[in-house]
Amino acid sequence: MKTINELESTIIEAFQGKLRGKIVMPEDANYKDTCKVYNGMINKHPGMFVMCVDVADVIAAVNFGRENELLVAVRGGGHNGGGLGLCDKGLVIDLSGIKFIRVDTSNNTVRVGGGNLWGEVDHATHPFGLAVPAGIISTTGVGGLTLGGGVGHLSRKYGLTIDNLLEADMVLADGSFVTVNANQHKDLFWAIRGGGGNFGIVTSFNFQAHPVSTVIGGPTLWPIEKTEEMMEWYHDFINNAPDDLNGFIATMIIPGAPFPEHLHNKQFCGIVWCYTGDSNDFDELFEPVRTKKPLFEHVGEMPYPAIQTLFDGLMPPGMQWYWRADFFNELGEEVRAQHLKFGSNIPTPLSQMHLYPISGEASSVGNEDTPWAYRDAKYAGVIVGVDPNPENATKITDWCKSYWEALHPYSSGGAYSNFMMDEGQDRVKASYKHNYNRLVDIKQKYDPNNLFKVNQNIKPVKELV
Ligand SMILES: Cc1cc2nc3c(=O)[nH]c(=O)nc-3n(C[C@H](O)[C@H](O)[C@H](O)COP(=O)(O)OP(=O)(O)OC[C@H]3O[C@@H](n4cnc5c(N)ncnc54)[C@H](O)[C@@H]3O)c2cc1C
Image 1 (tube, rainbow, N blue to C red):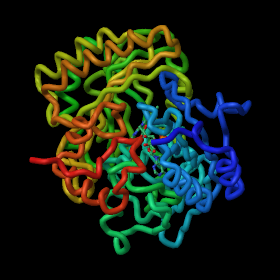
Image 2 (cartoon, protein in one colour):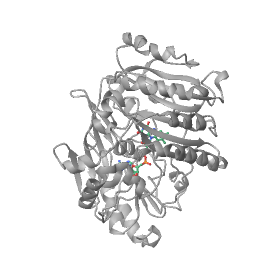
Image 3 (cartoon, rainbow, N blue to C red):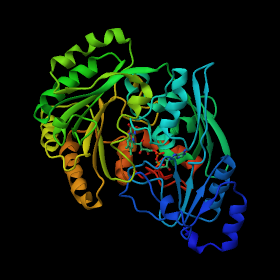
């Protein structure tokens, strides 16, 4: 594997001549800023960025990376916890210039560029009363979130993001361009619905959108001491609730405004709700929640893009983030006790734990229908240590690891790949479980030399049994 430093300047000049987008090199004034990703804990220094503006740029960049034997990373929204949109010394193919959105109201589909962010999609679809299921923070990239799965407020009603992916345009490792869907390159279409960026660069996605305009949503909070009681109750309630109601449960601190002052810097067990059904039915459906007497309720009607941006202000880019995750089937007694223990010792105001329900429509898809191997798990859990101050990096990392280690024995074994950092091959295998070998076959066919390896990597090699 070569580094950019080893290339003749004439090779780099010839490459720039093939592009409409710019390249950014370490000596350029904007290099330092271009190296930044969402997670301030990531400190990688690529040899070159290619700021692609169209498919032709992506093809040229893939050919350049392959022909010059470079380490290649692909960056969509730059949100990945492990910084998998960057690499050291190699080539970063940046897609942030490939943005376009077209809503087709004849069939409620949305065509989206490979470098778009989810907030841009929500903004474009909302005037048409439509939404595509995605994550809960609007600055997340469409590319990485979709290729890994996509869990959010609409998962119970309309499934994961991948369940709403109809088609993708891709540049493959050999530089060829393909369109994949249920009829064309079926193997690839299966693989990219959860298998991440292993199989090529997606330059455009086509999604099924749904009639979601206004939702009823927001948080309810209970004192942290009630964590065990609330988790036991929540498990029964959410798994029997209609698909119209989503709610993820969390342990967290209320850091400050916009919440009332009496809540600030206290620890809570919270649930963030999102209801997409008939508003006339909401109060009756929500009555059992109110019977549990939340200390604080801020649940009301709002446009869908409002719930999608509810937490953006608390989570600006550039903070330290340490991630750990697992799937869970149950919230048994010992698990609930651990949540109380670690939820009572959250190290910094923005650190938190979330359990996202994988039920309703998200669980109606089979474990082998997409690479997402845990449709039968009840929750995708994630623990994040978060803080603006790099001096607290060790503190948030230690808490996160200890919380995860205490819970892992009760987990289903693997994690949602988009909630993982760079955690090694065993974790990748555990996350794809029985689907791993099928992914290896497809990787061998489309990327036999593992050009796309900066991701939750499916190596194109069969294990000896
Ligand atoms: C604050 C925050 C909130 C989040 N909330 C949620 C949530 O609610 N639900 C959820 O499911 N996830 C959530 N995530 C996780 C998120 O899905 C992952 O971080 C995801 O990897 C981000 O995608 P990205 O394009 O922004 O990242 P990047 O860092 O740009 O890329 C991540 C990976 O995807 C690959 N990739 C990106 N775009 C493409 C493309 N077009 N073609 C090929 N490969 C590509 C990259 O090579 C890399 O391996 C959240 C993350 C953060 C930081």
